[in-house]
Length: 66
Image 1 (cartoon, helix red, strand yellow):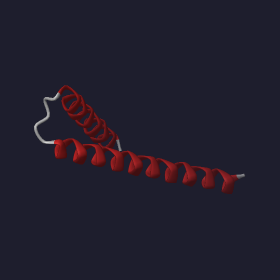
Image 2: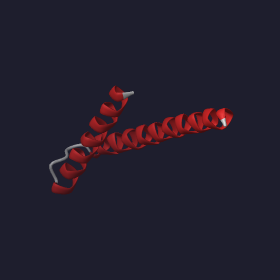
Image 3: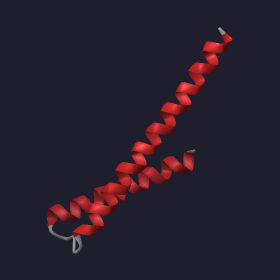
Protein backbone atom coordinates (compact mmCIF):
# COMPACT_ATOMS: atom_id res chain seq x y z
CA UNK A 1 0.00 0.00 0.00
CA UNK A 2 2.79 2.42 0.86
CA UNK A 3 4.58 1.76 -2.42
CA UNK A 4 1.35 2.60 -4.25
CA UNK A 5 1.16 5.92 -2.43
CA UNK A 6 4.82 6.59 -3.26
CA UNK A 7 4.08 5.84 -6.90
CA UNK A 8 1.10 8.20 -6.83
CA UNK A 9 3.26 10.96 -5.34
CA UNK A 10 5.89 10.41 -8.02
CA UNK A 11 3.26 10.60 -10.76
CA UNK A 12 1.86 13.82 -9.34
CA UNK A 13 5.35 15.32 -9.06
CA UNK A 14 6.09 14.42 -12.69
CA UNK A 15 2.81 15.99 -13.78
CA UNK A 16 3.57 19.13 -11.79
CA UNK A 17 7.08 19.39 -13.26
CA UNK A 18 5.73 19.02 -16.79
CA UNK A 19 3.06 21.60 -16.04
CA UNK A 20 5.70 24.11 -14.99
CA UNK A 21 7.71 23.29 -18.10
CA UNK A 22 4.63 23.89 -20.26
CA UNK A 23 3.93 27.26 -18.67
CA UNK A 24 7.53 28.43 -18.97
CA UNK A 25 7.80 27.25 -22.57
CA UNK A 26 10.44 24.61 -21.85
CA UNK A 27 8.19 21.67 -22.77
CA UNK A 28 8.94 20.32 -26.23
CA UNK A 29 6.05 17.86 -26.44
CA UNK A 30 2.72 18.87 -24.90
CA UNK A 31 1.51 15.29 -25.22
CA UNK A 32 3.91 14.26 -22.45
CA UNK A 33 2.16 16.63 -20.06
CA UNK A 34 -1.31 15.55 -21.18
CA UNK A 35 -0.49 11.89 -20.65
CA UNK A 36 1.19 12.49 -17.28
CA UNK A 37 -1.76 14.57 -16.06
CA UNK A 38 -4.27 11.90 -17.14
CA UNK A 39 -2.24 9.11 -15.50
CA UNK A 40 -1.92 11.11 -12.30
CA UNK A 41 -5.64 11.84 -12.22
CA UNK A 42 -6.60 8.21 -12.80
CA UNK A 43 -4.15 7.00 -10.16
CA UNK A 44 -5.61 9.44 -7.65
CA UNK A 45 -9.15 8.30 -8.45
CA UNK A 46 -8.11 4.65 -8.04
CA UNK A 47 -6.41 5.38 -4.73
CA UNK A 48 -9.50 7.18 -3.44
CA UNK A 49 -11.74 4.31 -4.55
CA UNK A 50 -9.55 1.72 -2.78
CA UNK A 51 -9.51 3.87 0.36
CA UNK A 52 -13.30 4.23 0.27
CA UNK A 53 -13.76 0.46 -0.10
CA UNK A 54 -11.41 -0.16 2.83
CA UNK A 55 -13.32 2.31 5.01
CA UNK A 56 -16.63 0.73 3.98
CA UNK A 57 -15.30 -2.74 4.86
CA UNK A 58 -14.05 -1.50 8.23
CA UNK A 59 -17.41 0.12 8.99
CA UNK A 60 -19.23 -3.07 8.00
CA UNK A 61 -17.04 -5.12 10.35
CA UNK A 62 -17.68 -2.65 13.18
CA UNK A 63 -21.42 -2.79 12.47
CA UNK A 64 -21.40 -6.60 12.65
CA UNK A 65 -19.66 -6.54 16.03
CA UNK A 66 -22.19 -4.13 17.55
